[in-house]
Length: 143
Image 1 (cartoon, helix red, strand yellow):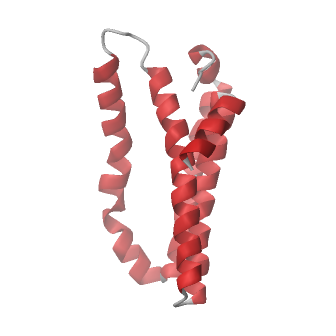
Image 2 (cartoon, rainbow, N blue to C red):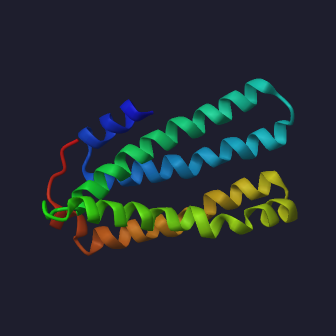
């Protein structure tokens, strides 16, 4: 997945790469919805985990390239990067606290479909940033 993420980041613009990585990561949750419907099946489990790990690595490589592009001042690069990665962790740390309740209430298949839907606001934010010319301001990013 890491090599695939590097390929995507080199082949496409940063904005397009973020679209690809974000969409793949969101859609990988559907493999877990499928697993929940299939039931106990080690091949289905292995497939779901492989899909999630592969797409997660793709998305992580692209996201790190994006964060690196945001850190422009050489005097403050380490501080900027540390703050941005800490900010990126807020969602998975605090917003995930209710996930168990949602999974128990809705059931696992619906929970993983909800996980896909929860990714939509980030894609809307990405579209908004594109319209504002955010990625043009960053210039070309080489991975």
